[in-house]
Amino acid sequence: MLKFSKDFQIGAAISAIQTEGAGLTKKGDTIFEMQYKKKKAEFFEGIGPNITSDFMRNYKTDLKMLSEIKLTSLRTSFSWARLYPDGKNLDNEAVKYYHNYLDECIKNNIIPHMCLFHFDMPAWASELGGWSSEVVIESFIKYADFIFSEYGAKVKYFTTFNEPLNPIVGGFLGDGFEPYVNDPRLAIQQAYGMILAHAKVVEIFREKNYHKDSKIGIVFDWNYTYPFSESENDKYSAKIFDAYINKGPLKILAQGVIDDFLVDSLKKYQMLPKYTKSEIEIIKKVKVDFLGINYYFPKRAAYVECNNPRFEMDNVTQKIPADAIMNVHRGWEIYPQALYDIGLALKNEFQNIPWYIGECGMGVQNEDLYRDKNGMINDDYRIDFLEKHLEQIKRVIDMGSNCFGFHVWAAIDCWSFRNAYKNRYGLIEVNLKNQERRFKKSAYWYKKLIENRS
Ligand code: BG6
Image 1 (cartoon, protein in one colour):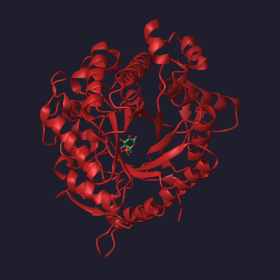
Image 2: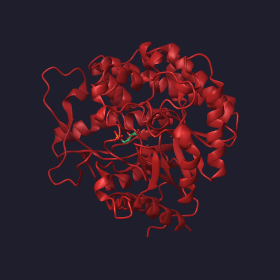
Image 3: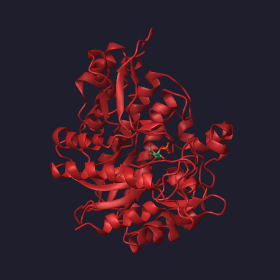
Image 4: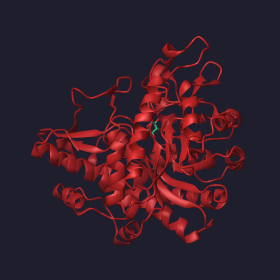
């Protein structure tokens, strides 16, 4: 079995919006409740964000189960819409809940990794224009400041955003999320506002320095990009994709470095966002302490003709090789080698910044089919997936990359955006009829992996 060092964190991830549901305290609507009210049919089997895995009723027993399999750490998020249901006033019951939750983690020897924003834009904030609104950014900073001062003694690892571009691409360049527009200019302005919000939050974290041991980072989804073919067009497409979606934004968010290639590409189509010099100064000062990397599949960028490109990304598409190994349930290519490439890039191009895997996992439909006679889901496919990805992590650590942990998505089956409970990811199964929990086979394998550290 793979062997990691004793201090290597082996944990799991979930998020507030995907596990808490409406929960037990007041909560303002997010874009997902908005979407559900308008377009229920878009969610798999019509299941919305109202109950999810009912974590607020179950977190004590859930954390207990996670401690039984010796999980070192749990990555999840605070809910902005729960702490500030109307966007302005703090809800004391919610404040208490997160204290209780963190206390329970500590009691179970589970390190909490807490994110401020996991896709869950409050509805009021979305209506004001999301990250293009100064009011929204200022409210986010107030919320972040509260979190750092209130919970800093219990949380060592804070992150600002989870996969920050994902909801922007989904909401402003496609039809996945609210507000369902497809306009690169608006998308770029949103991305700029998000970057500014992140930079201002990091700045306030440093200035206030409430708890000296706490660290600040960001969780970024790096679908490592390769050119689909050796053609010059495909290579250029990969470079563009990298500049807009991967390394370009990651360099800004992690180290405040703005890539000239990206700026020049934006200028070609007069696509630079509105900005001020003083904002750019704040952005350039950013230096996070660590990175969380989410990885599920690689992106193979290919050139595509477009009659009327609005920006250079309109000439980029994704292709999957005919012989790729696939997770057919999700339609995602399985390519563990990318984790090695990511680890080396972080070592060589990001000054060997400390990093961990924030999410990696395999979503499978109809897991019932794999139930054994004792009722346990025998998810050998998940064990195989995790083992192959962890092998690459081990390999890149041996090459000197500064990786300090791995979080499987997910600790327990979670609700997902639009897909609801179609693809299950958990080490722990959730029975949606009665909210009963049960370990899958992978949980026991994971426990052995954790115990095997030395
Ligand atoms: C990541 C997200 O993109 O992928 C998670 O951070 C999400 O929130 C996970 O659940 C798996 O994707 P999906 O769409 O299958 O749930």
